[in-house]
Image 1 (spheres, chains in turn green, purple):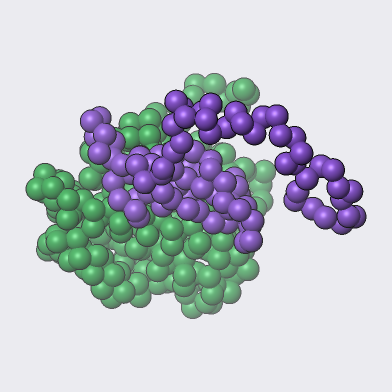
Image 2: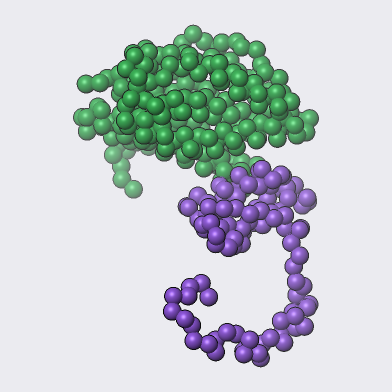
Length: 252
Length: 96
């Protein structure tokens, strides 16, 4: 395949948005009230749309008849490049919001920089996505503050979720081989370059919410971007890919 | 606050574009202004229905009472001459 690095990079960007969107989809109809159910599902659909555009581009680069659906339903776990944070299950509402908040801050920084990518398609997708992501961030930031400053229980639960999720945030700043290569051509963004801004921005909100910034403790030296995943991803894929595996190319 | 703890009831008004009137489109529950605004955006503008949102707490709306209907509205029933339909409309006038 020509341009294998670009193909891999598209998968890397798409998979995180896609897996996160699937997690949100699993939560559909289970939110505490109707308004929130629609709102969070809406975020999931935005992420799915972003992933779809990137996967379409990946399929186009691959140029062997592969479609974006094939990339989602027929790839094996270790071919996925989603980061671990996106794979964490919906333990409770606080986990869902904390996960979203940490991802939203990251995505806003990442896709703002990618809006200047020298690759026209990545550039275009990023410019479109960033408007949605800015809204996601505004929403999750409001929720962090609302829960942090809410009742004693809401404060404790969002703090607990933050504490539990924090160890996964190290991967956000890990530079994969493909992004290191493509950065030389001005196509990709080095994840490590986002760390300072990410810490500044998350700290600001966490403190405003009356919460405590957890200590930085990496959980792993092997990351999703390299195809090594949390144990959660396998179960997610087993459920999601079940039907296409049982009935290949089934039609509605 | 309602007893089922869904938060405050808000009435939602949308404007299709600048200069046009805001129209009532529905209601929602939320605990505060910001939450109500994001919920209104997500519930009522996903298909490009609006470019402006107004939110009003339902309890702040003063509403006419059903038992006043006769005294309030019936007297105008037989006064068709109050409608400006006895004039010829000039050409090019819209929104009437």
